[in-house]
Structures are given as structure tokens and as C-alpha cells.
Image (cartoon, rainbow, N blue to C red; front, side, top):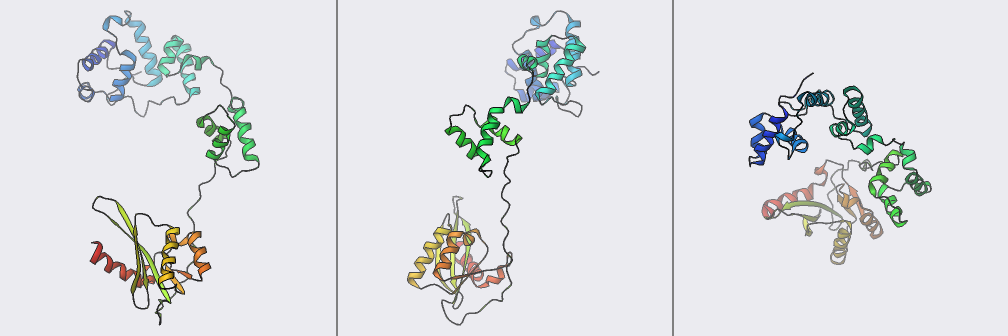
Length: 319
């Protein structure tokens, strides 16, 4: 059985050095201990003097030996962490550790609980199964999701709060997970298969337009976006919208402005960005009689006209 390299008197003396003003970052390398070991000593021996230690070294040696048996070496060269030192994470494991110290090493319950990090009341309390302990929460959640199984956790939490239930979000979420009510996160939206269409060269203006987004950064580090619309017939830049955020409703306003000035094209060629796939923009385009032709993902050359404009725009204006 491996014992500590330091006696209690030496531990108290090391803590006194820190109390005298030495920094923890200098103290720990000096004595070959980790920060976690130092703070563990401080929580156990902080404020104590050598006279406060027990006079009987044999009795104290038995306690150290018992603590070493449960927690591994109480102080190691590289701290308390190691492959042979497993922490008792749950109350059940800690309760077993306290029982082992009391029965095998004849330690007091108070001292055993302090070593295992378990409160005495938790040691004496008889554990209940979560279905019994949280029966009221289970019934309340079951009533909420019975008719609406798609309700998420925060929606249930909001409804329970309206009912003046006494629980906060922590026990509700614990029971919510144990009841397997977790909703699956929506996966990335799969795009429909896009057909490869040859680059069409229109013979008249306002027949096919191409649109695309660009992004850049200001001198203060703030990012902004530009929305460029180009007529494929004569490569004319019909509109450039600049802002830090451009959404589908903003695109609708842009094309309404273009509609009043130029009219709308028969076909709008775009990529598969979320702004172009939004329900607001697609519904408006359908109602306005403007067809949207999406290029294949990862094939910007299928929208070569606006990509060529983007290069010139970046070289001559942005850069």
C-alpha cells in the first residue's frame, strides 16, 4: 500500500508558506505537488497549526492509510490524478466507499464521509428510485406530452411554470431525459437533386439574371455581405445590396425594387444558399412569375457570369 510522501506536519508547514505570501504557482513546483493536491490540503488542513494535529501518530497513520486505500496515494508527484485513482462520481459509489472505511478500517462516520466527499445525511438517507422520488414531475410531463408528443423541453418547462409548479429546470430536465422524451435534433436539410444545365446565353435582356452573395470584413473586423444581381445578356450589374445581414424578406424587397425599375426576368439563376431556399422568397418568386434555377452544389462554374462579376468587383472595389 502506497503512503503519502508528506507527513501532516510537513503539509501544514507547506500551507504556512503559502499563507506567508508565496504564490501557489511557485509553491507547487518547489515541493513537487500539483495545484489540485495543494487545494485539497488547504481544504483539509487550512488554518491548522502543528499543535492542532492529533498527538497519536499511530491513530493518524491508520486514517491516512485508510484514505490511501480508497482514494489512492493522497499526494503524488504529479498530483492526485492517475490511472489507479478512480473518483467516486455518484452518491451510490460514495456511500459504498464510506461503508468500506467504517467497516474495514473502523473510522468514524464523520471522518469517512469527509474523505469520500459525502454528506452524513446522504449516507444515512435510504435512496429512492427516481420513479418514486420524481413521481409528480413524471405525471406532469406525461400530461403535457400525451396529446402533443412533439413538445420540446423548454416548451414543457414554460407550461409547468405557468401552472406554478415548484420545480426549476434542473429536475425537470433530468426527468425529461430519463423518460426518453428528448427530441432528435433536425438533421441538415438535404437538397433535391439538381440537374446539370448548360450555361444558357440569352438573346434578349431581362431574360436570365444571376444572383450571388459575397462577404468581406471592415477595418474594425466587422463582417458584411453584398448581394449582386447581374443580367446575363449584357453582364450589367443591376443591383448591389450591402449590409451586415441579408435575409429572404430582404431579397423580396430588393426584387420588388428591381421590378419597379426594370421588370423581372423569366429565370433567376442562383446557388443553393438558405436565403434563396427560404419559403418567403420562393413563394414570392412563384407568385411573381419568376422561375428559380438552382445550380448543382459545389459547381459555381454553372453560374459563371455572376462569378466573373464577383471577381472584378472584389479586385477593383473590395480589395
